Image (cartoon, rainbow, N blue to C red; front, side, top):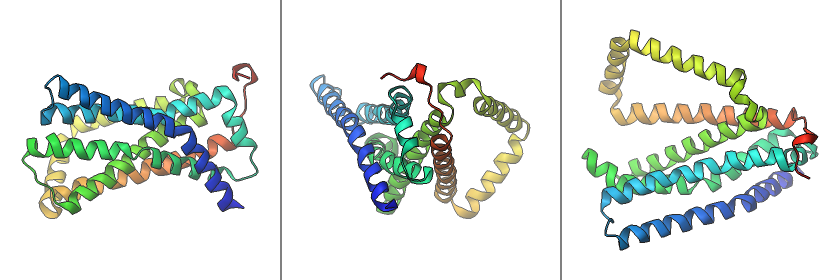
Length: 235
C-alpha cells in the first residue's frame, strides 16, 4: 500500500512539473539559438547563459507549492490515507527528478567557461562528483523553500523562521569578521591536509544532507499540520 501510494504521488508530481521542465528546455534551446544567430556563441557567453537559466528550474517547485495553498492541493494531500512522511518523500523524489536540468546546465557551464577560466581540467570522477553535489544542493534548496511554504506559507517571511535566519546571518557576519584570521587558519590547515577538492566536496555534501533533512521534515510536518483556509482557496 505504502509503495503504491509513494509511486502514485511521485507520478502526480512529475505530471505537474514536466510541463515546466519542457518549457525550460525550450527556453534554453531558443536562447542558445538566438546567441548563435547574434554571433554571441562564445564559451563565456554560453556558460553564463546556462548558469542563469538554472534559476528557472529552482523556482518552479516553490511556485507549485505556493499554488497548492490556493487551489486546494495541500488540502487534498493532507486528506490522503498515507503518512505525511510518504507524501514528503514522494514530493522530494519528484523535485529531484524535475531538478535534473540544473546539474546538467551547471556541468555544461563549468565545461564551457568556469573550468577553463580557473585553469582546471577535472577528470571524469570529479565531473561526476560535481554533477551529484550540485544536483543534491539544488534539490535541497528548492525542497527547503518549498517546505517553508508548505509549513508556514508566505507568512513565513514575517514569522520566526525568517527572523532566526536573519539573526543567524547577522551573527555569522559578525563572528566571521571577528574570527576571520582563525577561520582562515583552520581552512588553510584543512586544505593542506585533505586537499581543496575534499574540503569543498565534503562541505557541500554535508550542507546538502542538512538541507534535504530540513526539507523532508518541513514538507512532512507542513502536510500533517496543514489547516485549510477556505477564504484563500480558489474553488
